[in-house]
Length: 105
Image 1 (cartoon, rainbow, N blue to C red):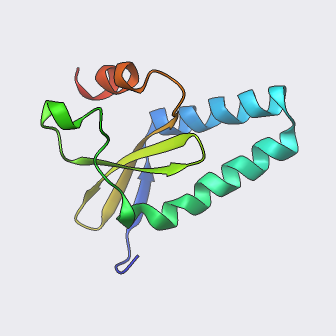
Image 2: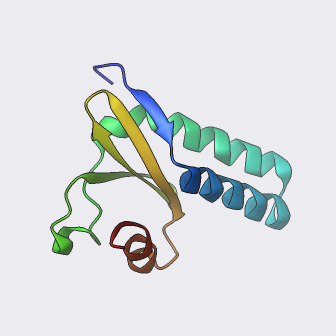
């Protein structure tokens, strides 16, 4: 990133990461789960290259951005020099429903 950002991970996004870790650990291995979480953490360095999630475009909400890592989507917003990570979602899930529940309440 060209400027230094402070990254704050929302409690819901932390829960998302925990659920992803548990799912991968149970269905593959703890080692694979650790590698995936590490890779998702590294993806944070690419946050400045995000785009508006397609599911939010029709709503007119433009403050949220996303980046992808494999099937996972990291949804966040940038305010001044702070990045707020709101979600880490498996892209194979019903993203429209998840985003509606979290952002359109």
